Image (tube, rainbow, N blue to C red):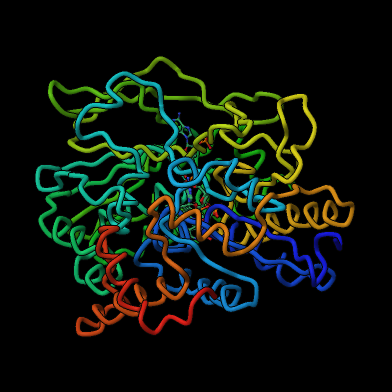
Length: 474
Ligand SMILES: Cc1cc2nc3c(=O)[nH]c(=O)nc-3n(C[C@H](O)[C@H](O)[C@H](O)COP(=O)(O)OP(=O)(O)OC[C@H]3O[C@@H](n4cnc5c(N)ncnc54)[C@H](O)[C@@H]3O)c2cc1C
Ligand SMILES: NC(=O)c1ccc[n+]([C@@H]2O[C@H](COP(=O)([O-])OP(=O)(O)OC[C@H]3O[C@@H](n4cnc5c(N)ncnc54)[C@H](OP(=O)(O)O)[C@@H]3O)[C@@H](O)[C@H]2O)c1
């Protein structure tokens, strides 16, 4: 038989996770001129695009137009989508090994990092992951209750772009939100919101914030909220000042400091809500009897730790009353049974995208990874292109060297047969396009880009509606 990668014997690759990393990896493989390949892209949801659909804020629609690039990939010969198929539930690693020459894990980092402080799990204290999923109509979070009608002050913990997103969603004008693709249930609840103040706690100073310039600038442009910064907290400590004024400082940090200084110089203009930025402030305890009633804040100073300015507790405390806490201190990956995991980093154990057998082991033949589950939960959508490209380069090199899996059942129909035997109601790309059309159609009368389905059952129903005109496997 000809070696895998030729016209008679194309390599069959399974990619698990249809977020940016999965789509970029699929594209890189399918466009390689020297390799004949077929790619099956799996996702546990009936809908593709990962955090582009379920993470990116509803009031940032332009960013979501990146999905047009992914649609071009999906239209390529050799590409198939299998939505509503979860690895670890419907298919196991061994099933993929039986059907594919290579597997790329690109299933993102869906869990939230914990703070490890008392009271973290009191009712009223939520991970940003669940709030984000809820307003973006992710089926896993549809039934969460944030009780916004009993909240006057919300505290957002963290100084990254996700913290900016969730704070902004609490502060935005409802008329503006109603024009977006935000989940219907979220609009209804946000309209009853009694939130007056959103306090964002950064454990370090304005020079160390993880957010980027447009996202912090937007805080000062909200119709419905004033932005408030205490000039004393905007003031940089000597070490941060020296760094910001040095040639080492990055442009984003310099601009972030400038923007926050601008906010500190402002007077509130009587808008109905306010967003208060606090710095050098860590939560040390979340208090309440049966639900959150306050956060105890520890005041920090910055100390040089091998060239990095880190937060150190000064011992000074302050108690801030609040009824809602959103913890936005980063995401983390979920281990997949049977695949070596790096617990410290929350990623699949890998070297530049090649999955390892164990911490000191070599490459596990045929297994690769890309995106957040490869490198950790940071980076914007475009970062995953370079990341996927590195992984695919290795995969193609290994193809050339004949170092892939030798699947027992490589025929494209075999995996469909297995899914049918297991009663898995998988969604093809045509099925997704039917869901898409239905959602867009639901939005049109209201001048909205789409009204998203929230329940998996509704999505499957909409996908099945297309089955009649479906030409078969793509
Ligand atoms: C709240 C939020 C907002 C963001 N906003 C922006 C922004 O505005 N602009 C920007 O550039 N970047 C933004 N980012 C970053 C960007 O979304 C990420 O860089 C990118 O989505 C990571 O891509 P990924 O493919 O690794 O993971 P993901 O996008 O998370 O995709 C992973 C996919 O795997 C699927 N999956 C998970 N487990 C399984 C399983 N067991 N079996 C099968 N499938 C599975 C998931 O359903 C998902 O579709 C944001 C991130 C977050 C968290
Ligand atoms: N519009 C956009 O482009 C957009 C929108 C959303 C997300 N994203 C991207 O998605 C990625 C993930 O964003 P993210 O906001 O989840 O993560 P992030 O950028 O890593 O920010 C995490 C924040 O949490 C803080 N933190 C961590 N542990 C803490 C603790 N124990 N106590 C208090 N604070 C703590 C960090 O502070 P330290 O710095 O002190 O550790 C940091 O400010 C980022 O790359 C982001 O840029 C982009």
